[in-house]
Every structure is written in C-alpha cells, then in structure tokens.
Picture 1 (cartoon, rainbow, N blue to C red):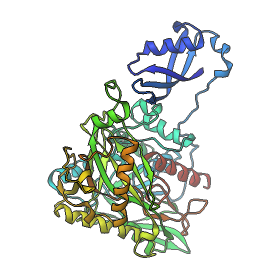
Picture 2: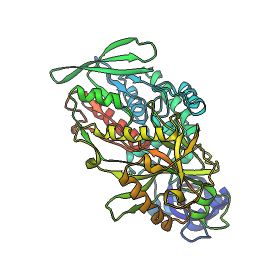
Picture 3: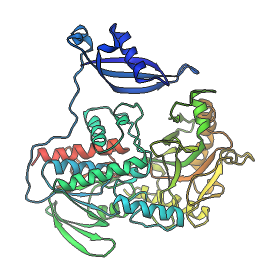
Picture 4: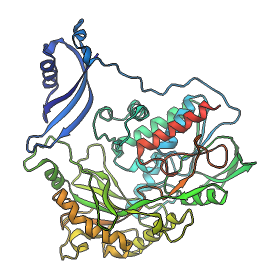
Length: 522
C-alpha cells in the first residue's frame, strides 16, 4: 500500500477523476490502481473563486508496482480497542454516560470488568421525547434534557469531532464511532462531524455493546453519596429519581464522568471533602445568521452549490485584555434550548448530518476569569453561571423564551433582525445587557465590529444575538493525581465536567485514558 498527499481536485470531482489524478501523479495507468481509500479531505478556499478539495489517499496497485514508490510506502494502523481480559472482586462504577463515560464504560467492558453505569437522565430514545416536550410545550424535565441523559450534551449538538489533538487515541475514538454506526466521512474529513440525528444511533449501538459484554446501565439513577473509609472509596449510594428507590453499591473504582452541568453533584462531592478548584470558562451569546451569507463569506459570490455548508472559527484579542471568539459553530443548524434547571435559560447549537437548514449559528464568547467570580469558594463559578441564566429567564418573560436582540440594536443602532429564529420554544426581543455581565457586554461591543472586519458578513446588523451561552466548559476542576485519582483513593474524575476535556473527542479520549490506567494497575 502507498500514500499520496496533496491531490488537488475540483469540487464536483468523480471517483474516476480521483483515479486519473492518482495515476497522473504516479505516472501509471488508472487501471493499475486496484483500490483507492480517502485518508484526508479538506477544502482549499484561499484562491476564490477557484475552490478545490485537497486530498490524501492510500492506494493498492497491481503486481509489484508499489515497489517503484518506496518513499510513498504506507501501512494502515489498527485503531481498534483491544484488551486482555481481567477480573476484579468489585465492579467499577461509571457515573455519567456522556462521551467520557461511554468510552470509559466501553473500555472497561472490553477488559472484562463488567462496569456498572449510573446515568441520572434517560436513555436517548426517551430523552428525545422529553427534550421535544420542552422545546414544544415548555415542560422542563430537570433529569432528562439537553444536558442530562444518555450521550451527554453532545447528543444534541452538531457532533463535531475536530480537535487540536491528533494522536493515536484520537484516531481510536473516531474508528470506534465509525464502527458503531457513524458515517465514514468522520475518518477523513478535516472538520469531521456526525450530526445530531446520526449520533443518537451511535449512542444506542455503544450502549448495546457495553451490555452485551457484561456491563449494566441504570438510567434515571443518580449518585447521592460516597462512603469512604481511611481515605478510600468503599461504596456509593445511588437513587432512582423516578421511584425514589435507593441502593448501595460496593466498589473500589468510581469514575466520575460528570457533565459540566452536574452542579448538585459537584456540591455533594465538595461537601464530601473532595479537592475542587476554580477554573476559568467563557460565556456570551449565540449569534444566528443566514447560512447563505456564511457560504458567500467563505466561498465568495457565485460559489459552486455542491460545496458543503460553510463554517467559520474566529477569535480576536481586545485592548481590555479579554478575548472574543466563536465556539461550537453549527452550519445549517438551529439554536437549541438547553436548560437543565428550572428558571434558567441556557442556549446551545445543533445541526443534523446534512447541515441543510436555512440558518447558521455559533457561540460568541468572552473569557471569564477566576477573579470575576464573587468569592474564592471553589464552586463560585457555578453560582456565577446560574446568576446570569436566571436573569436571562426573567428577561425572556419567565416562560423559557430566550431574550434576543439584533446585532445592530446591541451596538446602539435602530436596525431590526431579518433572521427567522430557530430557537424553540421562542424568543423575546429585549436588551441583552440586562442578562450579561458588564465586561461581557463591553467586550462583545468591541469585538463584533472587529470580527466582522475579519469575516465580512459575520456580524451584519441584521443578524441575531440570543442569550445566554454559559455552558461551553466547566468552571471547576476536580483535582486528580498522576494516577488520575482524587484525594480520595479509588475515585477518578474524567472528561469535560471534571475539567479535563473540551468536546466529544477529547472527553472520549479521557475516558479511554483513565480506564486504561485502572486496567494497568489491577
């Protein structure tokens, strides 16, 4: 097998075009190529209006032709998760079944350790119904919503898999997702995504595999208490949030795969003596635009309609020492109501795999520092988030409408939005400065014109700002050692909520890493 990099092909290329390009580069016939596999695919739009794909491929050639290209030799790695079986007296317990919990549980199950999983939310099929009921009828289930339930917050997102980390474990995550039903494109697209519609099917497949390997998953079941003896975990108390039934589970390996919204659990852990520290995070709004405007912004006028919905990633460092940046951009998607507590407004973004809806959106965030919190208490960041989420709820009309304002009006102009908002259950036009900290408002007002200079059309006066976006990352870190344990032996904080990841892939990687460490030390 050999590899070719930097193949340039037109946007509407065919498979035959690809084979001809490979043959031309090698100086052979297209018929000499037995198979061709995409390894990487990205869009090069630097020379508008001429936009093309840049590809890397692996090839199998006839006969001994590959021997002519020793400098292009390529061997495909095995990224599957393989472990020799081990046994333990007490089964490990995984709390939370988001990306970190799912991959930790999958690894532990493949190791033969028969994990017990506790998830306070419902399975994704039932969770889907609860989320739709909230979006349609304003009925919030505090245990089953966009933040809580099987698959974690990422289930109702774009399923973005692009990360700044590109290592072996990252590729393991992608290959496992593909094996479990994700589209093949995630293995080679430079900005891979699954889409919320397809991600739910992957989550179900992963759950079924964990169970088939001896794991147990208890939905609507919440961690209520940790019992320790001599600084070591001995058992936990879990309770069904629907029936109230409680049970004690003995364990000496407790993996805390908590999402960043598990505030009451964080408070219980802190009261139990677990070492937790403040951590900076970011907050702001969702900005919603017409996807056609973003396509024109990135591809130029008269772009080829066969190109996928365009995205963007923008950042600007401000004179006041803050930064304004976009995060979790959702092409052809919608802004979604993501509250997990009563009387709070939280926004997020979501796209299906096709990314074919009218609008685009992304988080538009300002960095929040530890000195911005009211106190030095380790959980003060949680209170900071909740304070502004409650203000947004009040400003929206106390009915789970999100407060919203045009970019122009936010910047002091009398210009109304022309965006058809996607946020359900609805928006209320309001002055967003009443539900955002002063430094966030000031930074957004400085940053919007500057970002629009970088990407003309990003911050058009008619575009819509929807408040508030507060859950981009966790405002705490649960301190862990080199063995991934807390100050209470046998307890392992994992993933984004614990402060060690940011997104689906890095959270999943952390789950693999911690599970492997436990396995190696058995």
